[in-house]
Image 1: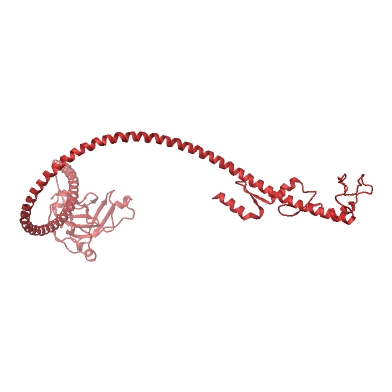
Image 2: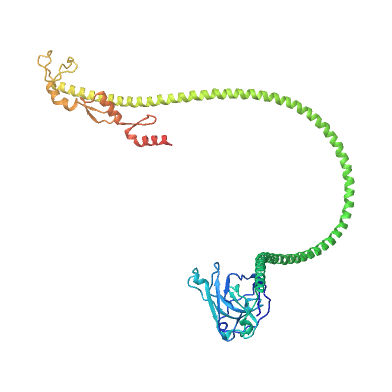
Length: 470
């Protein structure tokens, strides 16, 4: 019996021909061009894989999902000829069945059955491979063949020493396999880092190519610009040569002018010496003027002090003048008030004189009516307040005016008029206090400066008060 030991990561690469299947006709599985170095064969483990299968019968593939692997809808299991390079080289395939509960223990044990019609007919070595929907291999089985049974495969007799030797050889191969797996992981990491660095270098290369292209365009533009400038400079050089010839003639003329100017310069130097002597003389005069200016400054300081004293005196005088103006204003205000009172009293006096004249005329009329002379009557002072009812003891026949006064006095002698507004006031209530109150009601006093205005000049009074607010 033949015994095969294969390492999953170091299988020989042999191209295999692919036969179309029914699944391929309906829909091709997802594949990729990823090489074996980037595959992870330990995430799906194939169980109970025979060393060979008899042609003409269906083949059931048993596999186990590891703890950290989650199957997806487009995952599939293919039969690959040993030596395949990419997942595109499958011979036939079957879609995997998604478990209902991924976390259950039964969901980890899965199987898929391949029909005999789609299986290979040759005796080459094949293996099962679990491919996810990204086209990455997640697990691979040991190699097997499709051939009929042989008598050599039915019975195998080995000695105990051969068994121990085979077991020792298997242990050594397992250790070597583990070392190779560790080395593979390290190489995968290095390859990933190198691919990242390669990608970064490619991006930098693209950037540098773009920059280089821009620089080439810029250099070309700069070159064209320089050629244009070179032509311009050549033209300018020709112009400068012709101008240089003209400048040679001009230099000769300027040299002649320079000799003339040197002679003039000698005259100017002589004149400068004369001006230097004048300057020394002016400096002496300036020193004398400076002394005089110092004296004037001292005199000016004295004048300023005098001015300050005068300003202080003027300020004091202004304050006194302001005080006098305030006193004058108060006196003017008092004078105005006294004038108003005087005018009121004068009008009252005139009214009383008019009333006295009226009374005199009335008295003369009454005396003439009674046949008496007012000047011949002796003066009698009233002795009672009975309204003329009492008799004077000096008169034999009594008071001849008593009857007349009772009839005429209440109408004329008991009435007084206001000297300002000419209104009638009762004699018995027209005392001094009421007179002052009546006068105040007829006058308007300013609440700010106490100036007095007549009541009829109300508009003038309001304008005066408004001026205080401005």
